[in-house]
Image (cartoon, rainbow, N blue to C red; front, side):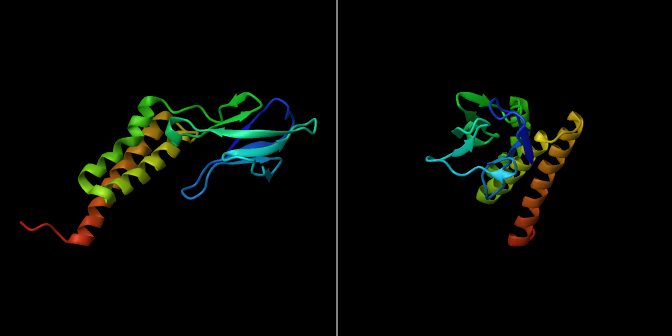
Amino acid sequence: MNYRISVAGFEGRDIQVKSAGFFSDYKLFVDGQQAPKGPKRDQMVIRRNDGVETIATWKRVVLGLDVPQLVIEDQVISVVKPLQWYEWLWSGLPIILVFTGGALGGAIGALAFALNAKIFRAESNGFLKYFFTAVVSILSVLLLLLIVFLLFGAPEQ
């Protein structure tokens, strides 16, 4: 998912943040070109409209679980509206699978958590967000049960 942002000093420019994948981090694009890496971790070098190069830095929020903010020359830009505490709680319900499924349950729960957070970021009806995240959570439990059944067979009675 790409998020368009506007930044003072970059008026009329197409600035986008590309969301992270499971194996990739957030990326900053200016006028369709990925911003080159800066001198330090989480930094990029970008050029303002007046030609001056400046450093853009990712500022991690909520232990790095949420979309980071972008800091450019003392401007803190929120790429997206932060999730509310109850959305984090609802999204994180599948994490309790770690208590019943161990590491496998935790991995499935973490995947469901990430999917739920992405659903809450989507542009749709509030009811649908809760409905689809509930479906993801239920499917994560069913997936864990299926994998356990396939690995260990049916429980003896």
